[in-house]
Length: 141
Image (tube, rainbow, N blue to C red; front, side):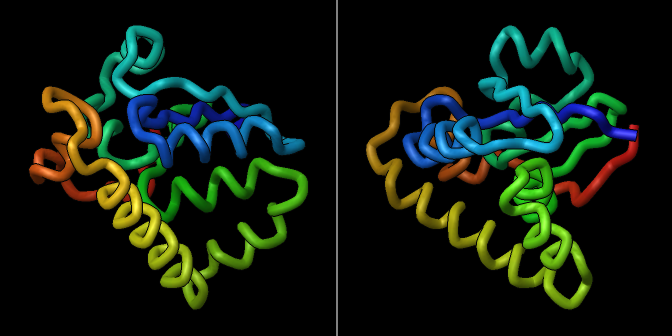
């Protein structure tokens, strides 16, 4: 059972950093640990995780080893908050998951638009170049 969540975000991405700030300001039901993706801290905490992929897509890791990416990671972030847990529980249902998928895709598209001219060699610049692998929906560790 997950009792804490680690949210790995691209610290070099302005949109990701804004989301981190917003998420950090929310009252939570489950403790959130906001960790820069591919950082030394992230590599130490999760040595077997594909850290290049975490730079391309928000990744949430439960303290029980569960891993969520893409729309599932967004839903888990909302699920951890007091205010948005009921919405997350609706979005997690099969009939509503396409809405979460669309929101995640929109955020990814906006992220790429905002990152024009980003420095090469990691982070969202590599994502624009297609260096990332497809999303993993949910993986129990």
